[in-house]
Amino acid sequence: MTSLGVTFLGATIRVLGGSAAVWLATRLAARLLGRLTARTASGTDDALLKLILGTAAPLGYLAMLWWGWQTLISGWGGTLPFDDRFVSGALLLVAIVLIVRLTNRALLLLIRRSMRRLGREQRMATLDGLAPMLRTVVWIIGALVFLQNQGVALGAVYASLAGAGIGIGLALKGPFTSFISYLTILLDEPFRIGDVIRFGDALGTVERVGLRSSVIRSLSGERIVISNEDLLNQTIRNFGDLPRRRVAHTIGILYDTPVETVAAIPELVAAAVRAHPPAEFDRCHLTAFAASALEVEFVFFVPDGDMGLFLDLQQKIHLDILRSFEAEGIGFAHPAQTPYLERQGAERQRAAEPARPSSGHSPQRS
Image (cartoon, rainbow, N blue to C red; front, side, top):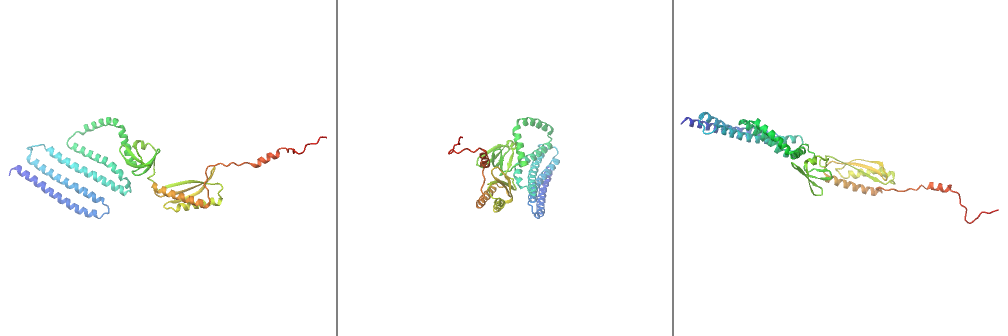
């Protein structure tokens, strides 16, 4: 057997033997580490172990191929029929692709676990929106590492990108501003999909948040499309993010209502609120002597941000208050004015006038 044949045989043995060792090592690691992760309640470590072992085996096989290739290079010397950098570059490219994919999956997995531990499951939708950008950054880093390893002068690449970036930034000022607004919505979360928000004169449910615009479904059914920049430039009232809703109402009753009846109104209102859990009664007071009514203010809480639940409870409470007031003879006031004539002043004016003689008698002349 020639020296080249011996070299090829040695390289083959190294590749096959090393691959078998990698296969055996990954299987043993899967069993041993699997027993350890099985003792934990979290499934994140199991998924992470599966990702790592699923990437470690292909990387090990690539390392064995590179080892065998280096054996061939050392045995053949300078008699290679093609450039060594092509094979080495191909192996490196495959390895970088595997590492980048592992990094992306592991990062997203760890971020999700951190959010769950912090009690921020509602930010999962935000993470889904940022995931493409995170993957893009990792892929760019992997590409730069590969180019740097291949001897590409990255300084010139960076300079070209910087010059092109200025022109692109001026040309894409509008889309870039919209993209920044999109990031602001994702990171700051002034609202989430499914929240009921009010902006300007519009009120509706958030259906979608896109790169340039958001879609709001109004309560009457029409679809409102507004750019993210215009939306953030307005005052947004979010009704979907209410852990506890405070409700305050003022009712006006007639001035001729007896004092004892007015004093009983807080108990009537409290009974109406407490009859409809989960509404929580807070207070009820006579607050003002208005121009046309005695004003009574009452406050209650709804420990839920759902708009439908709030409206249902409010209607039931209002109806109970109407029934209670009707049973007690309490009337609701409305803006009105009643004229009062001062009769005493008129009588004084008539008394000051001189008495007129009777028409049946005439004065006597002497």
